[in-house]
Length: 255
Image: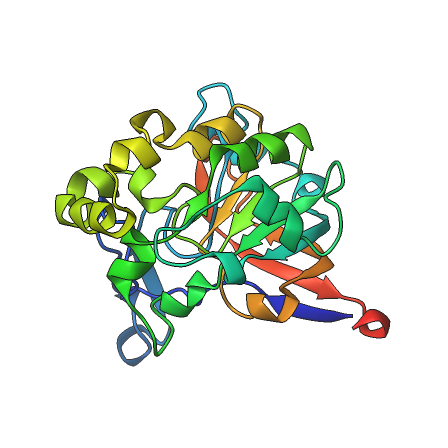
């Protein structure tokens, strides 16, 4: 069996979600002084590849300590949406189904892959504004359909499962709203109504479906395939999110 890492490298200089503070790493002990290395890390848990537990957006949703390992591992589809996603694309259900390598089964894991990881902080094509503020996202009908399929978890290589202008970016960057309206030729409210703010987060959380965001690593290797997938966060009682390792397992005979 071959293991494919779908996780972004993590580091204290990586960019964080726009409204959050930067990561801080401090040496508690060092080899030259103490003959060992120990570090203190101050970070929110939404940095890099991470899991949003349902409790992040739903007060009665599962926290990380409630989620069994069986719920985090299973078979699923990595749906390659690169042909239909670009700056601020709002992709629809018919596009997702057309690009799925096979029908989505009840209880699947689903990763919506857009190729946006090419803009993350580890790449030569790094562009933090494009990565966080101009990324595409699914129309709410996509998430409604996946919730109806009772999927185990939903993953994406984006900073947010919601379209970037259905998040606080819209409030923080009015200049980008103007850029978007010029691009589509319509007011943003007509294309991305305010009622859709964080819709995908709320919809999945209220259905106890975790989200995995900022996927990266070698995710392109498994694009357009059914594979076994696993997400491995902290087993944190009360935790609403966790930095997370995500992998795909490939049967060598079927590669």
